[in-house]
Image (cartoon, rainbow, N blue to C red):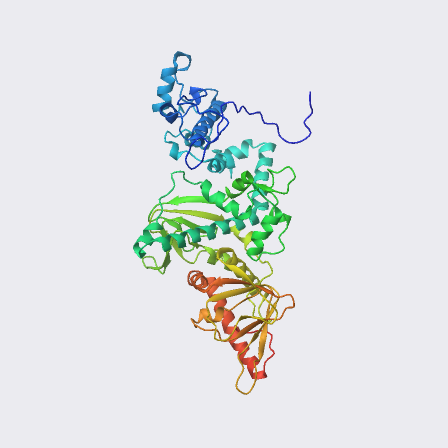
Length: 540
């Protein structure tokens, strides 16, 4: 007799198990002989395709068997054994191959039934992956409606345990909001990179457009395992199978979110006994609180005047940005395609209602991040679009900090180190980058005149953005010098000018904020020049 002090006991019979290659579906376990064309196990748990191909794909067969088990646990009977004791094995096999599962006297919720139906699809290609299973509403239980429980029933019968579970789910959503926002940003960048790659591979603009019109997933509102795994590996580059605090800090530091701590991990480490690591299963559960939706052509994702609730990433299809100026008057402002994001303007400026509508130009799939998660991840983190004037309000400072955080989270970027005394760029250099100072201190100087040397116009401090003026005005060359004056050198984040311009074109709040900044800097430069230099800000 033994005493279990901690952990979980799991009893598993691996006598019939085998390892399969996920790409070829071939058995790869070298220590076990192939079944030689004879299926092993119990026929009552076989998927339909096993009867015709005993060596068929492993995972879809396991998903089917899991569906049989889940049904039996809920109903104490086999879903395809309507005849009971009167049926022989041949009739059971025929029912598995050709008949539907029996839900005639189903005693549970509609969500539970849909869960079982998903597992018991005849076509193995349409059964969910393990990741998608973990995202199913019946397991995630976002709310009582997903479990098929009416509000009135909840008010009458909710027990203390149910109230505790609801509170537990609410706490999980709150404590994982920051990490989910960071993971969502990784997904946005991956979708953008996939979009760029498809366009680049296409031989024509027309082919590029077709490449972005991906077909909707047959698995409905669940993220694909491939998408989740690729995002997870951004954090877990070593392939450990979990995300540590150091992994999280490395990724978030790359987005300009320095000083992250355990609060970013809180709530997502429930799969780890030590409470310090996010396992892959916990990561999937974490991301299940983002929502993937499919919409038909002509449907509105939101309308002008609607309450602001979500941030969106377009996974497939095309949407139109529409402004309504009357009951029968509308203007299509822009068309967005797979790989792009939208809905950020209202969230960044803290608006309560949408200023435009988003309409589906084709059937689409979107991934949504809630307003609460967006605000947790893209709030103020100590950066600013630096103007150094000291005249802006606290609200402006917070907005600029949020904008820089957002820009770094959604834009491809790379870092470079500049030694003390070296220039980030000089007057006359190509204006093809937007910059953010990650560490150190920079000074902005003009080019001087034939009668005097360069004058210092201002400073750029850690966390501030610069170099946007030439991009805003479409100037091909830099008009100022920006030099590192930090003994330990300066680390600068660079965002390609075309990516920055695209962001300005699609994000009204970002563009207007930078335009206001540029106007202030222009006035400040004129004032500094008139005083002979040594100002506190500088237009770069």
